[in-house]
Image 1 (cartoon, one colour):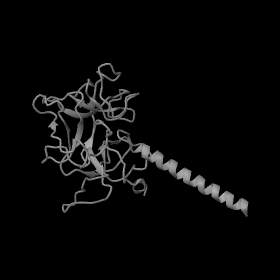
Image 2 (cartoon, helix red, strand yellow):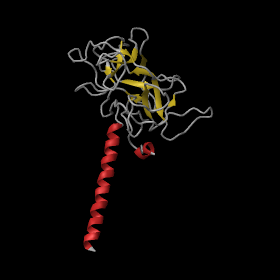
Image 3 (tube, helix red, strand yellow):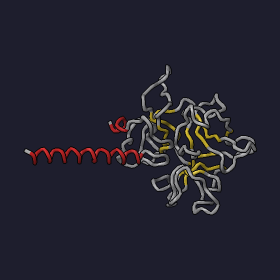
Image 4 (cartoon, helix red, strand yellow):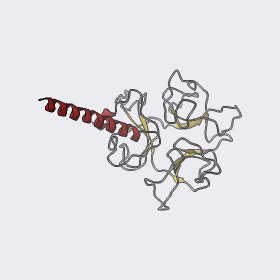
Length: 245
């Protein structure tokens, strides 16, 4: 009897460790800048479109009205606002806040006035990719960038996905191995996984806390598919089980 109880206890503990390991692996999959792989926990889940397309903006830290290397970059979702709002997404890290994190009401950058790319003397900003294997098609190994002055990777461009030893959210330097590489337009659009399923009176999904933003890159659109890119990260109260059901 003692042996039977001991075996049950061992099996129970083994199951707990297995579940924790699976949860940790899933959490790792859901990091900022990661691409969706076959059989990932979120593959095949529905994506919601934004009622009005988000835009890339930056906070002009030194007030020169120019984009400088240290200026933090965001995805901004409310076209009627000219300040960094709650649930905007940081594309570059800022102090203790990681790239891919959502802005909170109490965060130091909430309420900061931003500037838009592609206006005045500020370069345009586009999501583009470096065609590593030269097959003229976007694929799993191709890194994605926020390309400023689109066409080639230049200093100050932002890596949306990692490239070699350069992490997602890092900025390109002239000496980096991907500097001066050609870029191609990334197919698709920004969409989001509506974590809590809330909608407005027109039937549009409401983007808010906990929702994960994706670059929806290929057919079928409005569904999470292989090679889509997670451009924000799941954390806090996010329940991984909601994705696995």
